[in-house]
Amino acid sequence: MTTGGQHRGHCRCGSVAMTANTEPVFSVYCHCDDCRRATGAPVLAAVAFMKDAIDWQAAQTLKRHTNGTAHRLFCGECGSPVAQEHDSAADRTFFNTGFMDEPECYPPAAHTFEGEQLSWLALTDDLPRAKTTLSIKRP
Ligand SMILES: [Zn+2]
Ligand SMILES: [Zn+2]
Image 1 (cartoon, protein in one colour):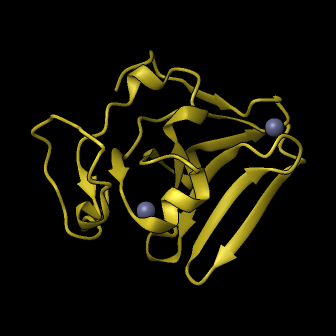
Image 2: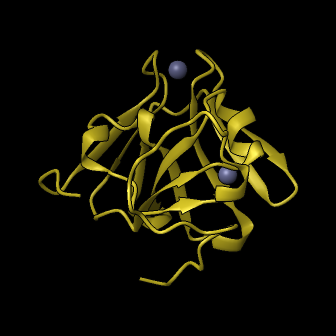
C-alpha cells in the first residue's frame, strides 16, 4: 500500500473528494448482505483510514444513511457509494476501494463474512477468511 504518501479518492461526478496523508489501516473484502445491497456489487472491497488523517474536499453533497450501528456515506449528486463507518470502529472510515483514485494500491488482505459469499463468485486467493468481522486492532 504505497502511493508516495498521499491517498486520494473521488466520486463519479467529483462533488465528493478526499485525501489522506497517512497509510491506510487495512484493506478488506466484505461479503455481507448489507455491503452487497449498499454497493450493488457482489462483494465490497474497502480500505480504512483513520478519521483524523482524512481531509474531505468539495464534500457538500456527502450524504449519510444510518442503519443501526452502520453508516453508509454516498454522493447525493451522482449517487456513488463512498464509504462506511461503524460505531464499533468509530475512529476510522472504510472507503470503497473503487472510490480511491489508485485502487490498485489497496489489495485486500482478508475476507470478512465469508459465509455470505455468493457461490458463483470465484476468488482464488489464499487470504485469511473470517466468519464475520475481523477483530480490529488499534494502530
Ligand atoms: Zn458525486
Ligand atoms: Zn459488509
